Every structure is written in C-alpha cells, then in structure tokens.
Amino acid sequence: MKNQLSFQKVGKGDPLILLHGFTGDASTMMPLGLSLSDEKTVYSIDLPGHGETGILEDNSLYGFEETIDLLKDFLIDAELNEINLLGYSMGGRIALGFTIRYPELVRKLVLISSSAGLATQGEREVRRRSDDDLAHQILEEGIEVFVDSWMQQPLFASQQRLDPTVIDKQRQQRLKNSPEGLAASLQGAGTGSQPSLWNQLDSITAETLLVVGEDDSKFRRFAMKMASGIQKSVISVIDDAGHATHLENLLDTTEVIRSFLGSSE
Image 1 (tube, helix red, strand yellow):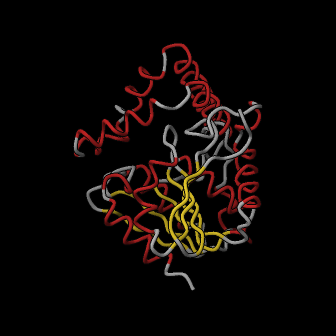
Image 2: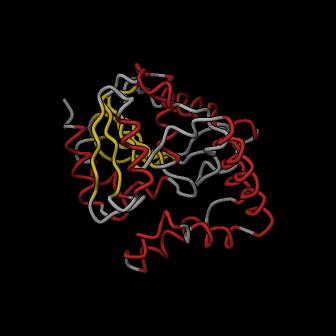
C-alpha cells in the first residue's frame, strides 16, 4: 500500500495529464494518449483505488479533495508547472475540481462526458446512499458480479456496437481492480461525496473543451449547462459515440482534442 499515484508515460512535447473514469485505469486512456503522443508528453494516471495505484494506506485519502491533493503531489514530483488536463467521467469531475483549486497550473482543460456534480444537498444525500449500497455490493458479491452489472447500464448501451473483443478487453481490465479499492473510491470520490462545483465554473480561466457523444443525451445536457458557466468553453459532439467517446470513436475524439490543444511551442 502506498500514497502515490502510479502512471504510464509516453510521447514528447508539453505535458498532458489523463484521468480515467470509475473502474478504469491508466491503460484505458492510453489509446487516446498514444494518438496524441507525437505532440504531447502524456501521463496517464491510475486514480486511487484503481490500477497500480490500488489500495491506499488511509481510507480518508480516497476523498474528492484528497485525490486532488494527490494529483498536485504528482505534479510536484514530476516537476510539472503547467499542464494540459483531460478527464473522462469521474476523472473529468476530478480534473474540474483540480482546475478550480489550481487555476494557475492548468493551461487547457478537456472534459469528456463529465459533470460538475450534483447541485443540491438532497441529491447528494440520495446518491451517497446509493454509492454506499454499491460499495457494499462490490465487497459482498465480488468484483465479477459488480463489473458485469456495471457494464449493463443504459449509459454504456452504445458500446454494444463495438467489437466483442474490445468489450471483453474492457471487462478483463475492470476485473483486475481491487474490490476494496473500487469500494473506497466510490465512497470517497463518488458523485454523492463530491461538493457541487456548479457555482464555481465562472472562476475557470483555462480554455475548456467539453467532449460528449451524440448518443449520450444526459451528458450532452450537462455539457450545455457547464458551457454556460465556463467563460472560454466550447462543446464538441462526437458522432457514433455514447459516454466513452475515446473508446467508441477514437479517431474523431483524437482529432477534436488535437485541434483544441494545438502543438507544442
């Protein structure tokens, strides 16, 4: 057990940090990272409870704010002063929180299928109870039952178009995660535990790209709402994709992100 974030690194150019979604790991963002590695030095992070980062020494470190602290520590260790930051889903919520707390460190922000959290205390309470139930399910029923249930969510229905080998590879990656780590991540940094960031969006000064899939109506609505709050923001809707645009349509997702980030000076 440790209190440092593991990562995979590839490429050359100015730094681009990638943050995966819940049940993912650094490897799930690497196809996108590799596609951008000719112009960026890509660091794909394993978030707390996931991948090689795995189980932390102290359960309090899985919290939303504590995860932001760990990311800041990672930048210090890697001697990175200004970054491009990209997060998908849960990773997008963390990227958003990081940018609000450390605006001077983020040059450009990319959020794939992300939200600013739940707006009201009541909504957060309901979600927190749901997250707790799900965490207990992971621990009691085992990770295989949980992963198979997780992948059947309507949110991921568009992924049924993918080649079965791609879906199976994704399932195998998820099964490598620690049940204890996933449960702790859900309870610490799940949407129910995260503070609402909606009222702080106007403090973001970084240029921001909001990427959403055309088949993900829920997160398209979130993107439109977020764009109205973030000063320098633009939305890009990816055709033939749902929640995980970088998995479902890597080519178009790479193209819009590459264009937005620009080449290294």
